[in-house]
Image (cartoon, rainbow, N blue to C red; front, side, top):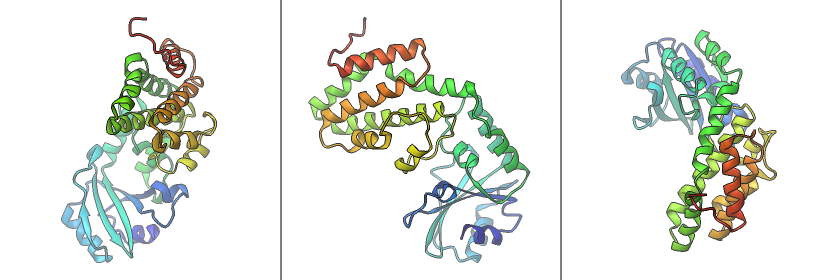
Length: 274
């Protein structure tokens, strides 16, 4: 279906097209949509895009103006009973965003992973250049990404606050912070493995992508996120982060965080002055 849509696209609507998301990775199921990406210079107007989409039977066509990263423009439409997320990108803006990510100045989000693991449907020079730039995960980015996540784990009172939220029955904020911790674990692990981050769905597939990881990663993430007993969820999170930190190369921040998590697990919270 993605190939069919790409073949029908006039060159003035997009010079290059690639398929990303779960379909490109071979993870899709009956609930999945299609993520199609169109590279165009210039990006066609909304009227031009809608005229083409209408001509191939897309209905409804819904502009997603709330999410336009990197200057991209997104549209959601239904094609032959399947929902499609379609993004239009200028090549210069994509390249600038990728250079920022490679320099450690941008959030890796899903752009790098989408490009690195995409299926070209209408290949061209811009897509070739972008994928070449992403063919190697830089060591400097690996170190910077890990250190960024470690900064949030070096404050004893910040971690102790998670247990306080359990006692206060502050379930919403606890869930927000535990989700943040789970994402940080995954970002550290993807950096350790020199792999670009996907959208953090499909935990079992994500675990298979990582050679360096704590044992039973997906199962442990699930226990943090959806466990029934709040104290157990916090303890599971502390242990998972500790085991992730143990895989990171020694540094002052890593040793500090590792000591804090170990003490929290042992029930001996460190005071902020120690």
